[in-house]
Amino acid sequence: MLKRYDGNPILDPIPSNAWESRMVFNCAAIHEGGKTHLIYRARGVDGHVSRFGYAGTKDGFHIDERLPEPIFMGDPINDLECHGCEDPRLTRIGDRIYMCYTAYGMVPGVTRQIGSIQIGMTSISVDDFLNHKWNWEKRWYPFPRVDDKNACLFPEKINGKWVMYHRLAPHIWVSYSDDLKHWGASKIVMSHQEDWEYFKLGSGAPPIKTPKGWLFVYHAVSREFHYQLGLALIDLENPEKVIWRGKEPLLKPEAPYEVNGVVSDVVFTCGAVVRDDTLFIYYGGADTSICVATAKLSDLLDSMK
Ligand code: BMA
Image (cartoon, rainbow, N blue to C red; front, side, top):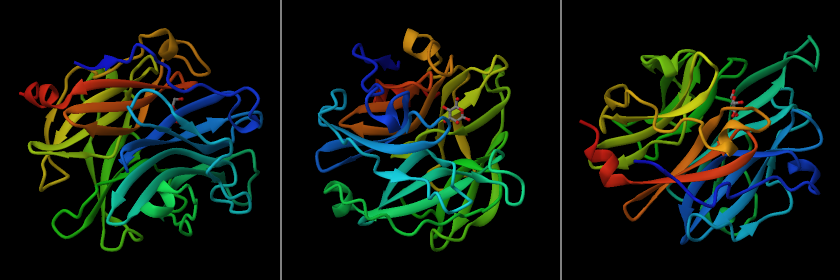
C-alpha cells in the first residue's frame, strides 16, 4: 500500500557544504503554513557529529527551499550533547513546536571517545519556525544519563497528561508529564513480536490522530540488522493499548538508495504528515539521503483488520 516516490531520493548531501557533505537522513516533518517542513540530520567532514538542516516542500515531493547553514547543533560545551544531535522529531502543541532529539554526549570522567546518548528536548514558536528565526528554547533532558532515544510527543494531552513514546532498548516505552519537562510513570508499550523486529524497536514518526486511533509508524531491527518500518494503531484514549499491529513490515530496504549507502539496508523515519487523504512518510535511505513514500490513509486504516 505504501508507494515509493519515483523521484527518490528527494534530498542528497551537498559535497561542498562541510557540515552536510556525506549524509543527510532521518528528518522530522511537519506541515504548517501550506508547506511541509523537514528538519534533517546531516553529517559532513567531522565524522560522527550530526547537526540539523532545514528543507521545505510545497507539494511534499520537490524541495523548493533549503538553507545553507545548520539550524540546530549539539552544544559543544555541554557534556550531554558535545558529540552532536541526532534524529529530530517535531510535534506542534498550541503555538509552539516541540522537538525531541537524541543528544549524543560523553561519559563524564572517562574519555571524549566514549559516547552516551539521551533524549534532548526544546521548543520554538510557530511564528519563529515559519520565519526561520531559530530561537529555540533552552534545552532540557527528561532522563539525563539514561541510555534512551527515539522520543516523540503526542500532540495533545490524553487523560490529562502529556504523552511521550521513547525507546529504552529493546522496547518502546510510554512516559507521562504534567508540564512537558518532567517525565515519569514509564511503561513498556511495544516489544518485539515478529522476526523482522528481532533486535529492537523504536518510535518513528510522532503519532498521527485518525478517527480509528493514533497511527504510529515505528522502526524495527531484524536479525540481519536491517532497519525496517512497521505500522501500528494505538487506542485514542489509552497510549498503552495497541489496537492493531502489522505482521509484515510497512517498508523494508529494497530500493538501491535504501540498500547501498553509508549504512546499508536502512529505512528510518522521524516524520510523517497527512495531506488530504495522503500519508507522506519521510525517511532516511541507507543513512545517506532522504526519501518519501506515500499511501492513502483511508486504505491503510481499512487494512487494519
Ligand atoms: C540508529 C540511529 C539512526 C540510524 C540507524 C541506522 O541507531 O542512529 O539514526 O539511522 O541507527 O544506522
